[in-house]
Image (cartoon, rainbow, N blue to C red; front, side, top):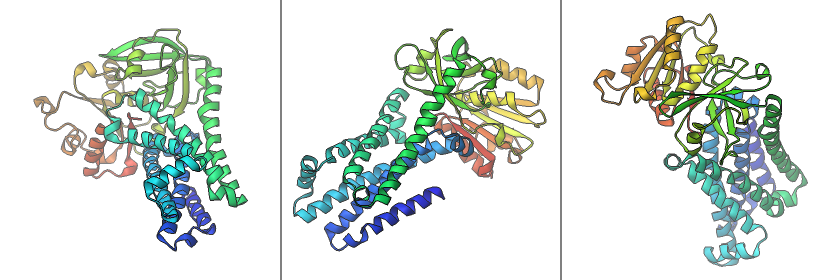
Length: 432
């Protein structure tokens, strides 16, 4: 409702400032469209930042996975709106001046103040949007994707300066000017408080360091992190932090890793698979290395439980938050089934821990190990038929799923085919 109300207000201000009055000719119509797309493009760009500001009231209520999904689509909408602003404004001014569109665009770049600055910001937005397209994202390393996304902040700053000195809302109406300045202040205030201030306080208080590193599987290590007063850290099993290890290059890049064991007041354990440049470097961590953390984030916790029994489905390294949640399930929680999908036994982490849990409490662990088509898997792994065969009462359970984008999509289709409702299924996506 808050987002819708602000969007209506943005449109109403455009009308109040004569947006519709310009729709009297082709050039005027194009100019009017250029103005309204600029306003909504700016609003959506700020909304993008709010969605991933890590404000606790957003993150813990909505859930990081859902916020990331919204952020992605709002980002695409932002790029489209800003692109439309550029095209419509150029066409409108060209029609008014009696020039061709290319000639007019060159004139705007050379003669109009802050247009070149805004164009540079637009290029940055396009780069960020392009890198977020699924088929592009799958071909980029996390390190490259992360670096490109930092340009979004620069693009928004340049767009702000362009709007401040050129936009009609800033120039002609003090009330509209105050509104937009308040939106910028609110957005960047959230970022300063929760993306900068919160982590500074956390790290000054807890002084995190690597305690020791344990190999869990091929290319998979668990990092035990110690610090001061960890029992006072408000974190739940299933949540994650953004981590930076202060060693070597790339320390400035934050990586999201979930806890892989319930917090016990002595250690925070994360488990890392060597997939990218930085995660390979994590295999070489040693005791004493300083650690910076931001968080905790996410709502993928036992608080989501609404039924007496549950089903956990893990794909590969997606086992980590589910393994942690097993430590924190309520004592009166009923039957738990864990389905662990991996391509080979070398990729199975925590097998000893999981088998011990299966022997000590009401946890049934089902390993689905091997490639599709292997005879021992008895058909397509995690198809609706396979899930219903392994867990006949799946429809009566809460279901927690964690893994890669493709894994989640496949499992979600199977669960929908089995008739499970959206509020029954909780996901943690390992592809930020």
